[in-house]
Image 1: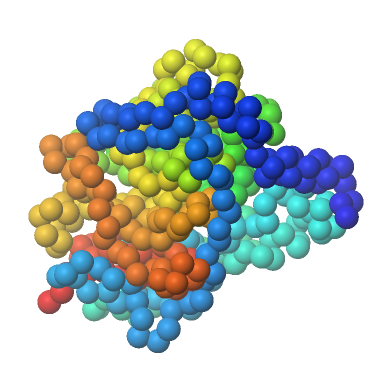
Image 2: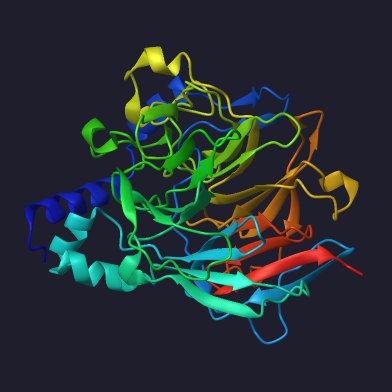
Length: 447
């Protein structure tokens, strides 16, 4: 079945993980990490059951696409329209300084490392794996500001793009692109509709990762002196060894030329969305937490990012709650693990993040955060599949609430689409990337 030992061993590891813990192992884990209520730094409470109180379940949604006239549902007082369609897995949105909208179209490749996948499927890694992802960036321009772009161009084509492009950034006459294995920058002038000059690789990154952990987001520091780069873990809970996690599960910080790399924050299993809270200037991120501990473990979360901070992965979760699969390892790290600020539901796959720094929406939304939840697969009931809103008051977050829903069909089996990246336009409207639906949705105040 498998042509290479690495793929065979990977398959054996997956089968072992799927078999689950024994009764004795469950009892020990539940005694070591009992059910409890944890209070976050912002006085929010989250109930955490003991590990394995419920069975770890795999349940994947069937995406059927959007019927004509059907679209997501926003709160009263808002309208939802299709901003762009017929896109191929639009994952991430970046809005340029002149209002141009850049959409990264890239897809998740088969699970495992590129080497393992190629060996298992007897594929040529450089050709066959790359063929499953569009690997391009599309530019959308709404020059007349009517909420519908008139210009649509391939801004960065597959031939000139890093593999699986995701994060984007304009800085110092360059356009930066975070691919799964590298960061590249291209000479760029505001307003150009295509990157024609070759890109320069400024940073190598560990390729791929567990499940969807191939995404590499970029954010310039507020003074534009450095760039933050997100890198997700290469495993669920370090089951492939610590050497596989070097430079992973971190927010990295580099200079604009790629030099001076340092780990800004660590122990973040899969940080993706990044943003600065408008009133405080504090860096925040959304994080996908670990799988296979049960339906209600572990909550994904939205948290401020402290320089030098450690957030638990893989040894503990939501602070200092020991993961039974890493019991006894690095107690000195567990002792300093930071409790995240805002708990989300378990397994929602929180990916997108955009702080609302505009004024078109009602006052309650000002300075708050929109979070794109791609949706669960490791839970007996679907969770996520919506955009959440987290209000802020005096720089402190409140409780998350639903904002954009209607992605699930309602039969507990199917979905029309799945939200990912979120971004605000200069006019104050909100864009939502729907990778499974192949669309970008626009949410605006009803006139």
